[in-house]
Image 1 (cartoon, rainbow, N blue to C red):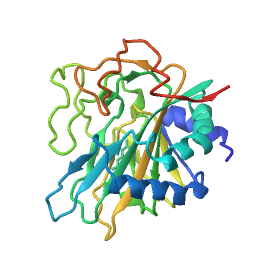
Image 2: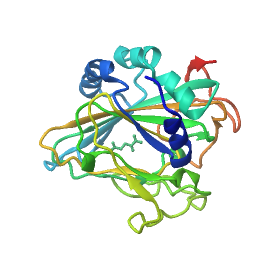
Image 3: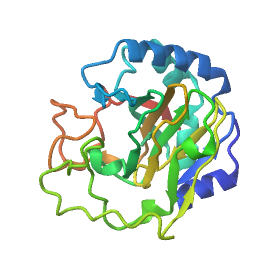
Image 4: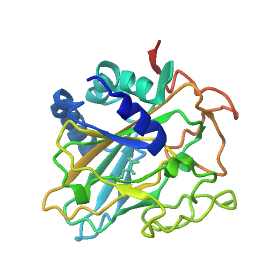
Length: 263
Ligand SMILES: O=C(O)CCC(=O)C(=O)O
């Protein structure tokens, strides 16, 4: 797939773009991996609303080393090249995969948030690919607050199911701006399998609960570019790497976060 100059400009100025049909051939492969993932959740998996009959949501992280369909996709699809072009980066490192499984009738919406403050990363060259594995009507698609990746301070991160502050020292962060008062243009795209919404880790985004009669499966693939560096946060990050043994300003370890593209 060839990106247009408009895709590159929009990604950098607005913080998000939709890419149509970019992973068409990969959907059956990713679906096989995701089905395995939900049947075999890792120790990192989070189960929200597990015991409720009004629907539940499962998240899992960092499974690419054990799910061969994920590693095949990361290595052999256009993911890394597209990342380099959109971030305008000479080099791309893979950060992690994040799987979201929303059972039908789930009452749990994904709240407005930025991903960056949950991560031990700082930098402008960051990219997430939000890849639904089935058709998604516009109102159940990712909501992106365009331009919000340029804010000067991060929004306070919270635990999604309890809404409690994620870190003890939350003075570093600011309150979420009012999202429905016209401060940002909110963009959503209807999705066909094979499309991806691509966005910067600093972009404020959210998603509705799953009101479909069927479960939904989404994979978010996260990568970083030249200027991304390790940054200690005031507590455990998500995902957390217990023995990462890195200090502020270092490039992320290549044994855990492999270089997947280099010019
Ligand atoms: O699909 C969702 O509910 C939200 C996904 C999200 O926040 C992300 O991929 O960063």
